[in-house]
Image (tube, rainbow over all chains, first blue to last red; front, side, top):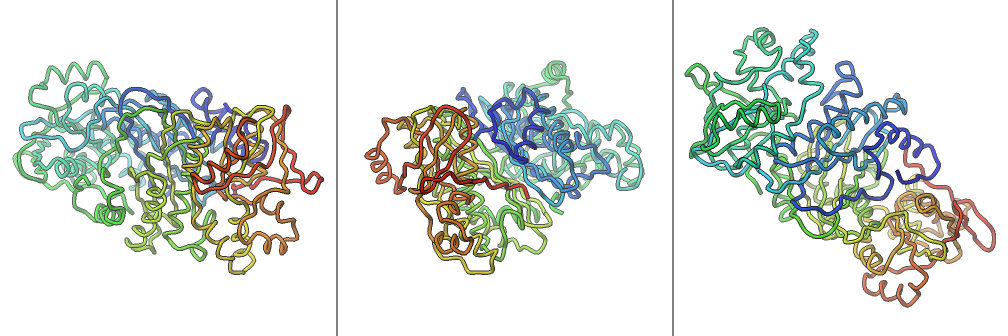
Length: 319
Length: 319
């Protein structure tokens, strides 16, 4: 770490850096330096505000940090990129101790480290509530955008869906979330390794499911200028979805397809990528892939369940 | 621009993008892509919150955007880097119109464009007050850190100091700032071209003056492991400083040396870099350089005015 001048502001930074350990080795200059290397850089940013994107009574500070970082890192996964690192701007309420800030940043660092990156730098300021803005930087030999899906491609989804929504609905209903769904909400796993593997296998277009399958499929369809057909009957359902869907009087597949913030990947693969390829990548990365639809000429998204067309509106984060 | 799905959240983004014009050509994917090119990448981030870093009754929305971006871009200047672009996370209060958000982002885009960069992407969310987090990305063949100053080096400062503090003190005292000092506060000019030129001329260590000369000199001394001697008699004074310093009953040089957020550069150059070199760079970049001190073995900073040692405490932004 670069020596900092004396002063209370810098004591606070020193305490955070000591929690980050080896993940913060270069912090303390005007800028963090990312040495030149082959590949394009990709960058994305994600702002989380207490009371709007998370609640202190639902999550521990370490989980708040992990979740904010994981949500941003998921955008790198959707680009088929490796994680280089993150910068974090942190707004700290006056009620928080310096240890609180270090604990939250520890959760950020854990998520970044698990994804193979480092904490590059950041900014601290006093604020009326906790807020975190995480900017992620990655590197990709061939970045995969939302734009390349072609008629005939097959749509695959990673992991399971709806778990984060099941936890959210439980909390909002005054219930204790089922442990698996709580984990899906509090410690989502950005699919960095899988995203890179899919890029290498020729992924045509990819997006992460932060707005929910319905909403994000609409983005991919709009960006690629194609129509998507989704078959919800085979949708892989997350932990706790069945019980919360029953309470919401929705089919579990619709409940899961409307759920935001699962941070799984939706990818359009060329038809040559088949079930055996999906199983190979699943074994390699530990994350299963399920074929849930096809790409056709046209526009928009059609979702079907048990032979009927169902609506799957996206989740509007702007509250 | 990449086509976005329908919906009110995306209408808001579309309106902002139309104000950004050609500066936002690639927005609309999970990540922005920065194509591979020679040189190291450098990155920094800067969070500004209404009521803490700026006030709506002092600045127009466009100025709030400009100033937030310029403050972040100034970190690139201090690294000797060219501007690639910025990502912006914007918190928007419920009282704001969509035009307000587009106006503020227009100020961001103007500052970024003037520095030679583009708006790469961002995030929007509702918030209790305006807040902006600007992450800047630049590229440098040889990044200049705070660490390389050596005994015998000469310290140079760009432009003039104290103007932003003069405006701030006027507002806090219920006075109308002198126009030049208001401009120094509202539309600071990041010294991107000068920073790159100084890097090419062999700059050993460099920092931008966001915490004020006293505070930032202490950072540079600590990072480089040296002692700095500053001669304040020759300090180039900003517009409006004399009058506000008189009201504050401070020598204008001390008033200016304590003032934060001037966003000028403090640089340690090898002794071979002389007055003629400084004049050449000043003519090339339009920003004058003044020799204000020297680097010696030891630690800490000593400031002298009229033969006496004076205190020059830094500005603690953490409020």
